Length: 466
Image (cartoon, rainbow, N blue to C red; front, side, top):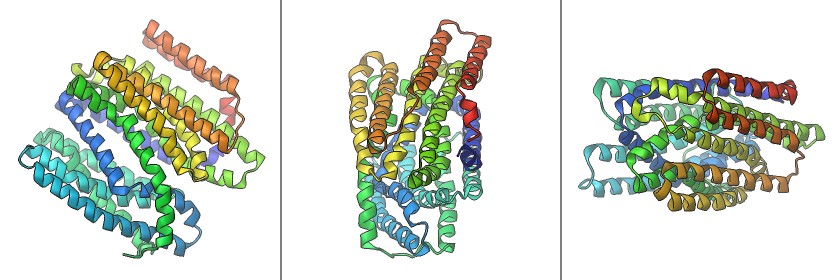
């Protein structure tokens, strides 16, 4: 199983690593030209962009990504599904763009040039993303890795090139990020739509009521989950901005951006694993179930390995390459990184809920953690600032993962080696404590080596041969 994941997932993993590494390399340049306040404003606008995407798609893109596994066997049925969703997107976004245009018109007198330009551009960025997502989901389900990644990688590097040119050459500020996105987004959308059209999957204004009702019912379950995800990942920046300062929201967003590498890498691996997981669950043999259990253990070890790499070496990276205003507050790295570990664990188990088409369960799993996150932020951010937001994120991500794990076990019980998993976590926490007690680069390298050797004693590396 792992050979299949590496075969299809290695490209996703390497491209994610390459793009994230490029992002790391560009951050010192970007932060040189943007103050903490400007960086905070940029990330706050990104938060608003996420809400706009949810409103524009109604989570139909997520539903499409699930149903293509059922429809891939028949070109006729897949064409009907794709055309139906495509038609709904066109009709609904006519209304959505109209509302956006009216909103911008009424803001003309109260906003400046930069804010109005961004407000005008954002709806189109979101629109282009929708159509890109449809074909991306289709290509992922078929493991069309090379073509998809060539498009994705090219788009990423072209976007970064435009950003750097506008930032360094013209000093255009944060609006350049969104100008680059809308230009590249339009081109990439055109490519994806052309690919689906050539395959005969898009027939304009073909609409099947029964298909739409089935997909929309599934999508409705995702809408609250998507909103909960926004609360988890993005609302804390608004609260920090309101109660503390925009600069502290920028500092918090900066650390969050760096620690999100755990989530990025997990998504890359999960992209390759999800189709394999669906096939293993469909056959439902003892051997397949054992492979799934083994995968969970290996991924926990990998997640904690990345976590330790971040807490041990990311502070040195920041001290070496970033402006002084972005340095310090490194406890945030440990707190937020561990939060993303639990979010990664949640991602593994949510596949079980997706397999059984329990979209409402997915939504329900996010309600309690989202309100806990929001409540803790409102209570403690005014007193303890961005550290309270970080602890709230960790607590809510842990609760999120726990709830999804319980739900998944209720649907399909998996027997794990909890002693082995506890040992991995214990060693990681001991190394975390030692890192704060004795800060030394040589010692950090030694401690990471100890953790990697632990994998050998726990037979983690033998599992990769499966």
